[in-house]
Image 1: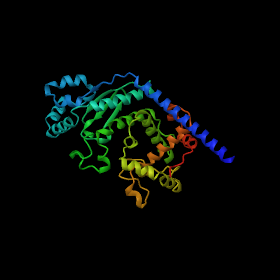
Image 2: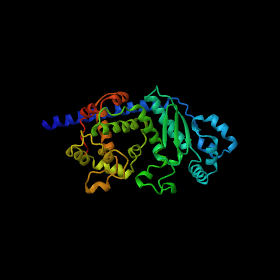
Image 3: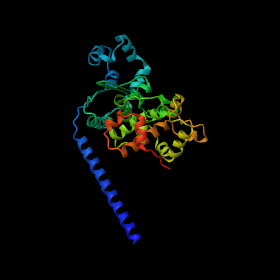
Image 4: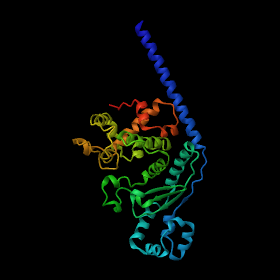
Length: 325
């Protein structure tokens, strides 16, 4: 008799699980269909190519079209046109980005998702530029304009990046461009943390990464956070000891800014002070914050916008986060 009851319970559980699975898939399909119908007009201007092929007498015309790019007098730009290093830079960018078609498709999809979840947002005018490989400024999202510094996406092994540390160079690849644009957009819509604790800062970055889950549903988790596939696997396999370390070392409610450098900022590895450090990727605090936000959203029926405005402490308490073993 007991075995029959147990069997019936298992049957009911299986049916309910399958029903929830199919309902979830149906909801996902409906959202995807709605996003596909979103109409956007994405304007992309290849200023990098226009300037590379221009002559001095064409500068007034370029200045008229792009007044915000010409704060300096024409003599500065003429000198730039004639500089051998700049000419080589233009050639390298032109060789890598002879076509921008793939990037355009990715950006159109990204902005379709942005417009679906944030209909009040205007679609920016995308302008490709070179910026002397200032990788910290490779994406600038300024109101109605989005500037993309293409010389920061020539590939990790490019000669221009030979003097950079490897953890920096690996991110300078065109495959990360849509993710970088999504990060720049996130800074516009994700409120800064309400307090200075390490936990609040982790969850702030977790919000950004969860936002990418929605804006870039077909991208890999590694691409969203800027890891390699091996690094995302390492984080997944070590999630429980990472979390245990944060708890045991009493990091969660600490306001020590050094924790940013150890676990949140771009770095060659995370700094636990253990032998495993060199095996770990940097920014593992962001990864844990991401898992906390995911756990919260799985347990609560709340819109994306509502979640973004919630306090980090409230999200943590309601997430009932448990790391995977």
